[in-house]
Image (cartoon, rainbow, N blue to C red; front, side, top):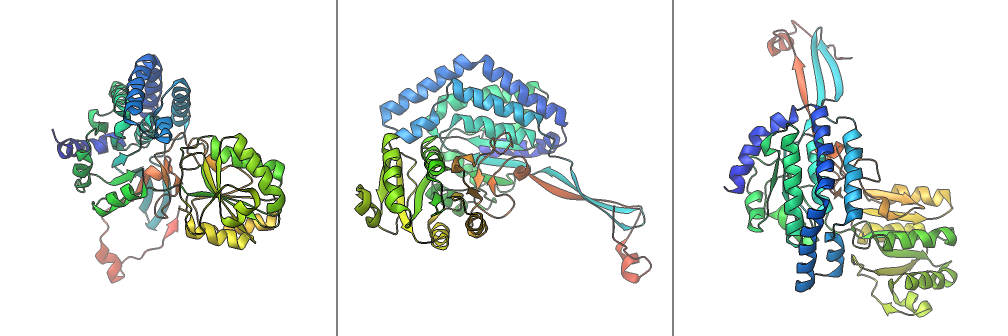
Amino acid sequence: MTIREEVKKMKLEAPVLAASSADIRSAALLLIKENLEKHAAEIFTENGKDLAKAAETGVPAAIVKRLKFDEKKLQDVAAGLVQLAALPDPLGKKTLSRELDTGFVLTRVTCPIGVIGVIFEARPDALVQISSLCIKSGNCAVLKGGKETTYTNRILFTIIRDSVIAAGLPEHSLLQAEQHQEIDELLECDDCVDLLIPRGSNAFVRYIMDHTRIPVMGHADGICHIYVDAAADPEKAIPVILDAKTQYTAACNAVETLLVNRKIAPEFLPRLDAALKEAGVKLRGTKEVTDMIGGETITDDVFPEYLDLIVSVKLVDTVQEAVLHINRFGSHHTDAILTEDADIAAYFMQMVDSAGVYHNCSTRFADGFRYGFGAEVGISTSKLHARGPVGLEGLVTYKYLLTGHGEVVGDFASGKRSFHFKDL
């Protein structure tokens, strides 16, 4: 059966999932957790196959780190499922109640988007997070993970799908796509897929956008910055920088570029360099930086996403210059300032045009679980519908319900009746 045929079935069952009770959807998440833990040994065995294949084929270390699914990752996704199950139901929330005329009431209520296609990188934990968020928000989901995690994704999906069905939710709530050509098939399903969320390289996301009529939400690069202001506290700044770079180097919210105020550079850069070297991080600086501390010199116009133990460093004179650099070279993902000057921090947080703007903390906090969302389907750098970590609120839309008693527009157009627009 083709993806289109499967997705058509999903589209027909989407209203059934949307109408399911919050208790059933939350119970499904807890059953997923129970069954993942019950089958942990099998999951780790399948993940071992993916890791062995990655070693044979020379998969980059940054990707290998993402595809590993061990006891710690299982504990993390289990905690996320519990947190997500306990969150309030995002559906059926009344966001507007307005009487248009006596007894003629308009309401606006939240509802699922419908059928969502998510194409994501080689991270097995992402499959758990995405599918669970979709179930909790009442959305059907088509899931396509990276080929590097074929075995792990297959067993995880089987466990999740079986748990969802056992909990009483529709059979076609979830669908797994495994073949690369199925991505192109999915892109043509604009009549039955309501939203696509691609996670990957800039080129990949651009390909998705250019080859479908389905609305696309997501982000490509995670070129995150930290600006170290002249009023920064070095004792606070260096641990934050180390966490942002090394806590999970392959994540899209890891810092990639450091901007340091020139006033403190002569004293701060040697301390920073020593701390980075001790943590195994290679510093790449502009000529002005490497003239002070040595290392590899880079140009002033290329500041890439490394996803590795490498960081770019550049000097700036002011917070204004830092903001201009970030808004030009950043990916509008997550950027931070380290300073003890409240006015400078306020300027930075107002003027930086990113989904997440932080003061005196690590960029690694840009995460749905750490925001209390339970999980996330991704981090959006767009400005329409959802921005930043996309949790339950980013996966719902709304519809208008109008309850009348035989009203017709002609009566209002003729003046026989009139609107009085009273918010209830």
